[in-house]
Image 1 (cartoon, rainbow, N blue to C red):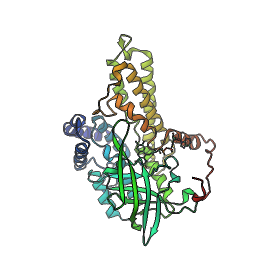
Image 2 (image 1 turned 135 degrees about the vertical axis):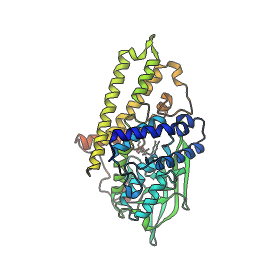
Image 3 (image 1 turned 60 degrees about the vertical axis):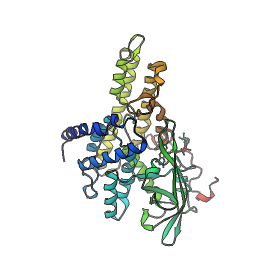
Image 4 (image 1 turned 90 degrees about the vertical axis):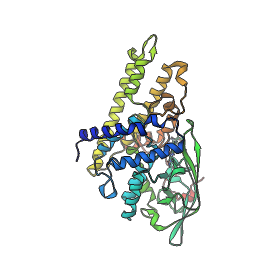
Length: 401
Ligand SMILES: Cc1cc2nc3c(=O)[nH]c(=O)nc-3n(C[C@H](O)[C@H](O)[C@H](O)COP(=O)(O)OP(=O)(O)OC[C@H]3O[C@@H](n4cnc5c(N)ncnc54)[C@H](O)[C@@H]3O)c2cc1C
C-alpha cells in the first residue's frame, strides 16, 4: 500500500492543479445549480485521477487504501474549498451501508461508482417531526403490500433530499412490539411516484434540509436492507459510521492556523491580538483539544481496519469540535468589534467567522444533539446509570403520543 507521505504529496500535487477550476475562488457568485454542476464535474475528475473511494474496496470501484489515506486526502481537499458538500452524506453513510448489507453486489457496484463520480446522490431519511433524538420513536409506516411494501408518512430535516436519486430509510413495520423491535430498513428511489421533497432555508440561507412526504410509495422486498424488524440494528450501524466519518476536528469550521493568522492581523488594545495572553491561551486550549480528537479518530480508523468495532468515544468528536468552532468564531467576531458582524453570503464556514458562527448551531443538533452525545458518554464511557426510559419494553402502539 502506498506510503502516507508519498500519498499526501501526490494528493497535494493533484489538488493544486484542480484549485483554479473547482476551488473556493472559482465558486464565488455561482448559483446553487451551477455549484452542484461544478461539484459533479469535480467528483468525476477526482474519480478519474484515482482519488475517489480511497478506502472503499476495489471490487466496488474504490481504491482499497486505508482510512488514514482518506483522512489525509480530505484534510488537504477541505483547505481548498471544493464543492463536495453535496456528496458527503451520500458517500459517508448510505453507500457504506449498501456495500455492507445489500446482496445484489453488481447493482451495488454500479451505485457506488455513480455516487463516487457525482452522478448519483443519496440521502439519509431517519428523522421525523416527532422522532429525532429518539429515532426508535419514528412513525413512518411500512406495510406489506403483495410481495413488496408500501410507505406512508413524513420525514424531516433530510439533507439534500431535493437533489437525491436514492435514500436509505427506516420505517415502522410492526407497531405491536416495543419500539426498537418493530422497525425495518430499506433503500428508496427518490424519483418514485408518491415521494415529494420540499426544501427549506436555514438561518444562513443555505437550502440543505427538506421535509419529505411518502404517499403510498411502493417498494419491492429486494429494497429491504437487513431483516424485517431488524431496522434499528442497521440504523445503529449507520449512526456508528456517522459518528466517525462525519467528523472533522475543526468542527467543519476554520482551522487553528486560520485563527492564528487572523489574530496576527487584528488588534486588541493597540497591539496584535496574538500578543495577548488570553488569546494565546484560547489558541493553545483549542489546539490541544482538536489534536486529541484527531488521535481518537485515527485510532478508530485503525481499529476498523483491524476488523474491530470502534468504541463510543466517537461521540466526543462532534460534541467537542463543534463547541470549539463556536467559541473561536465568537471570539473572532468579538475581536473585530462592530465590523465582525459583516456578512458575506458567498463565504463558506471554513474561511469566514460569521458564516461559521451562523451555521454552527445546526452542527450541535445534526447527527445527534449535544445532550444525546453527553448521554452516550455518560452511559457508555463513564458507566453512569441509564437515562430514564419509561417506554422500555412497552409495545409501540401503547406508548401515549
Ligand atoms: C442541518 C441539519 C441537517 C440534518 N440532516 C439530517 C439528515 O440528512 N437525515 C436525518 O435523518 N436527519 C437529519 N437531521 C436531523 C437531526 O438528526 C435531528 O435534528 C437531531 O437528531 C435532533 O432531533 P430533533 O430535531 O427531533 O430534536 P429533539 O430530539 O426533539 O430534541 C430537542 C432537544 O431536546 C433534547 N433532548 C432530546 N432527548 C433528550 C434526552 N433523552 N435527554 C436530554 N436531552 C434530550 C435534545 O438534545 C435537543 O436539545 C438534520 C438536522 C439539521 C439541523
